[in-house]
Image (cartoon, rainbow, N blue to C red; front, side, top):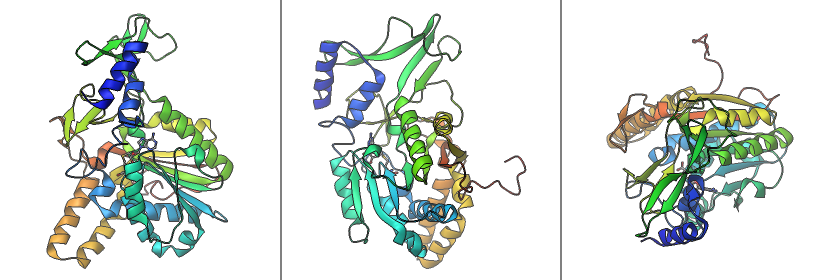
Length: 375
Ligand code: SAH
């Protein structure tokens, strides 16, 4: 039994079965045994990979997005560049390198704030970013970021926030709980009393996942941007409209795993409900742009041209790698996913939204396509 399994068993034995979101939160973020707290999960030897780990082009374009957004908004005085869940620090390193072409922006960046709870990943970020001539502050949460204009970046962060999981029954919605048997095996259960507060209408058996943490965080960031200036760019896999269905998945060594087996040893994520994030932004008085697909976003920012430049500067092997990276980031063709099922290509599965004050000009990548009158 893992250390976290023993801890969870003790909690459930004393308090009774726990809601799924609490289980997920402990699996990922338990200060002693949590998945992210105890390891570096990325890369071929790890459990999963992410866009900045696939290609330097991703972080470079996100960095240029931040610089151009800052310039379009004509933000005066110092600004903070904030990243939520920076992983190995790769995106930020690529972003800062690319921003050398925007020295005014770099000069205005007073501080890089990295919101990160994992001590192991904080160390990796420090190593990756040292000697770049920028001040770095690590924060436990968004609330710890000093006041002032800030540009927020979050890639594959919201999908790691815990979701409550409900199933529709005749009289309302029952919440998924996690219990434990005598042998220490975790099993799913349901609350006895259906929840009456959820108003959504759906057929019996429908599953609804609610990420209250993500909604509240998007609201807090939006409210801050409205009051103090700045913008947010959120990139993640997820759906455009609030939808029914189970999306929680666990990954271990790039293969689908059971979230209830060996807690703390696999990455657990859920699709991000972009409609909920956009509602949170609007309710806070901000404007949400998108969601658009990652493919559209990167293409509009010039990923093809960037790939061409990289291809020209490298040897034939490097050139072939650039082609492959470009395909992985922007492909909309279905591919075989971790569970052996067909999933949309990354360019389609991943979505992007931007949040800004209502009087700010449209951020790069979100301009209506002149060729497409429907957008
Ligand atoms: N953005 C990176 C890493 C994504 S993985 C990339 O694209 O490669 C999720 C990241 O969020 C990890 O760095 C993890 O440690 C961090 N994280 C997860 N939950 C968190 C939380 N509640 N608060 C702060 N950081 C968190």
